[in-house]
Length: 501
Image 1 (tube, one colour):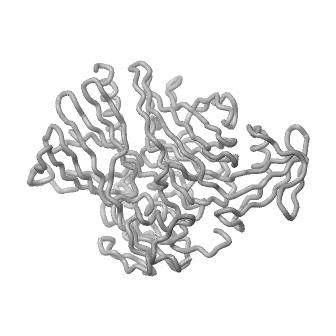
Image 2 (spheres, one colour):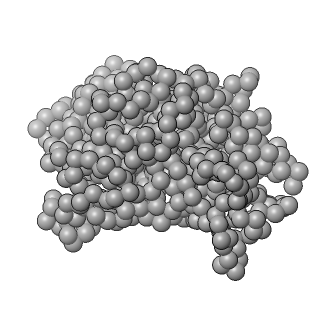
Image 3 (cartoon, rainbow, N blue to C red):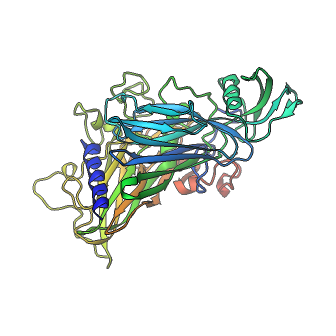
């Protein structure tokens, strides 16, 4: 128990730190969605924590028997989602990549002996983020770039694709995957997302000629992370959130900031709509022997306001298409973390084991404005101690029960353009990945939180002057985001969308 209380203290310390285009016509049914089966072409590991003997292990699995995959792994610090490191991994069919995020020589470092790494062995410290914020807490994203199948030694590209020569049998050598990616074109936008491919010929390190079929990203990746403290014998696993149908068509590089809206078939607003939750439900224990921490990850916040680039300046202006009314919650106090475009307000209602709830959600102080009682959630990763968060007891002084947390992103995050010309998307709630950690007398666990689906509207309206008022939906444009996933390609469409392909 002493060691687990030490972990609790470390988590609370982090809490304090965290607070200081395809060939087919695009339509609203052609978008990314959260994969219920945990397999997709983009992954989000919701939080990593590093310090002392505490480390985080991540594993990315290629579940395909057929496709080799090149993917970009992106590490972000937890304050503003700025990149601190990125690189490619090379996964043959049925392959897995594993790496540890550890503290080494006083620096947060990524280490791996896996042959899917860009270099073996891999040992590289996090770079200074664009805002200079600490990197001991953050999140990890994986963007699938291209997929490859049918490697043939001595084969030729012809009308029927890659043929002739000798088929390369599994396991596919990693140097062939790397060479094929280098030879692939910079864009596959002309290919169909579902099954379009093209033949690419290349020469490998063995000086032999090869050919291979190359595809846009295929939804074949899954992942799991583990927060580990060997000194305490702790292993806390958490599955990655998988986004499917991102359908990347751009040959990714490590020479630019990675943004959801730069790759794939989606804008950042469609990504947020797919991740949106109206409320989050967390059971808790809160007494002398038990504590519960909400771990709230916002992978689409991206607030690099000091990086100096147009894509990542954190400043709302006339050039930021579709972002309006960003002063609706809080103003800019000069700190990048307090930019109103990245604010998420929140409210809560706790219940005890007998369904009782306090008459008022907050402690009663006078005069204390709501913003002081519940400071907006501005960070990319926030660890919220339900028993005491900035002086708030979210549990309502109950020793056990559950709490409903309602989050609302700033308007400029919740309304904006889709890839389809003239169509915009709106959602209520917040684009959040919610999990929670329970620390008890002799036990500790880290599990996903349940949630209520957010309402999502696809609209022809050009603006949403008041995000509390839903815009007018187009046909089949008004649904909760759990159904929003169901109308994606290759899945059974809603009846009202059947003729909208």
